[in-house]
Amino acid sequence: MWCPTLNGKSGPKYLSIAEAIGESLADGSLSEGCRLPAQRDLAYELGISLNTVSRAYAEAVRRGFVHGEVGRGTYVRAAGPLPAHTQRAGMQRPADGPVDFTLNLPAAGDGAAALAHTLGTLRSASALESFLDYQTGGGIARHAAAGARWIGQLGLDADEGNIVLTNGAQHGLLASIMAATRPGDVVLTESMTYAPVKAIAAHLGRKLFPVAMDEEGLSPEALELACTGSSARTLYCLPTLHTPTTATMSEGRRRDIAAIARRHDLTIIEDDVFGFLPPERPPPIAHFAPERTLFVTSVSKCLAPGLRVGYVLAPERLSGSLRAMVNLSCWMPPPLMAEIASRWIEDGTARRLNEFQRSEAQHRQSMARRILGARCRNNEPCGFHEWLLLPPYWRADAFRRAAEERGVKLLTAETFAVEGSTPPNAIRLCLSHETTRERVVHGLEIIARLFDEETDMADLVV
Image (cartoon, rainbow, N blue to C red):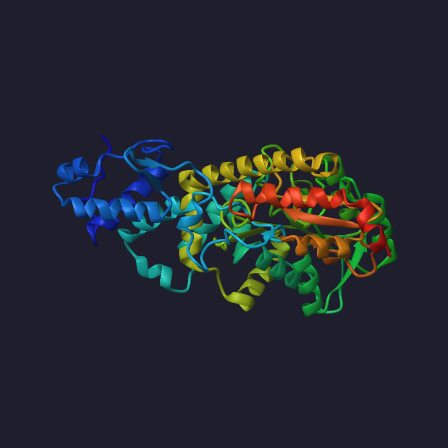
């Protein structure tokens, strides 16, 4: 019979039991489908009141660790999204209303159990005051070492001395652009790019120069022309699961981009925020041009979006400037958050949570292919988003409005188009934000029906 150890735990016993259930989920001593002891039996074993155990089980249900079946007992729930009735207003994703395909976030998995376990171990740790102070020396070095270990899984030889921590990848991109460029500089990028980078460039006074793409992403021939036809000395690109198009560069393409960057003395800002999703993928561009690449990644897309910890692997010549830009923009990432990420990387929790994201993405991609068929363009089965080219009788904005009228939110190609480029007639669907697969299926079925409304929609052609 499973029985928690409450020695060393402070606070109300019912909370300690609920936390112990979460810890046992995290370390594998409780697995999916396991039945917890009858409340009366556990009360007798622990020498506490039946009411205390009842409160503990109710708290475990509220946290999404277990579910109760009347007349049968209490069982460990399957790993995956929290049940709708456990969601708290403002803290979880809506379980009703419009199906939202606009947000490219990881699925709502079982990170809560891992967090409960980590916070429980931190509660008894010494020197907690260090997480409330400015970080220098040892704390930063340890967190950087965890970042180097994390990045090392992608095929990069990362020296912890060249790892700079940021508040997520988007902050890493901001700091990298500030470190590598000056106001008025031109930055090359794919003709369709990550929308926040467009906003960052505009606010910093940098001009984005669009470079044509093909089915693999950034075109080497177009990049060569852009280098000779502009004053740009910086390239921003997203080689793995490009947003919005889902393109992933082959190893040969990455080598070509690195060679062009060397010939034209380009600094590369490589956004690898989705790099941990594919179980197999080519090495990053930074592997082929480490001396000129700022490699940006995080744990937010592959583990949990609220864990705002990013890592930038910087070449020696840019690491000082990058650290200065991080200090200028936020001084430092929150030490407690960096500690949680480091512990998860060190104890294998990060690997387990990332595997869940891969599995859930694969399920949702399979649903998209079943419902939308050949319209799906994503060849990576573990990606979060889909890129759909619209038929000629639809225009993207009209399709978006029609989808919203039917209860589905999506983004059109125009959101991602760099000024000076012509966006294709296409839409992006993010499949991972919704809490349940059922809502994803419902939204995809609405999209599929819209694709088939050729006759009724013919009058919308501009």
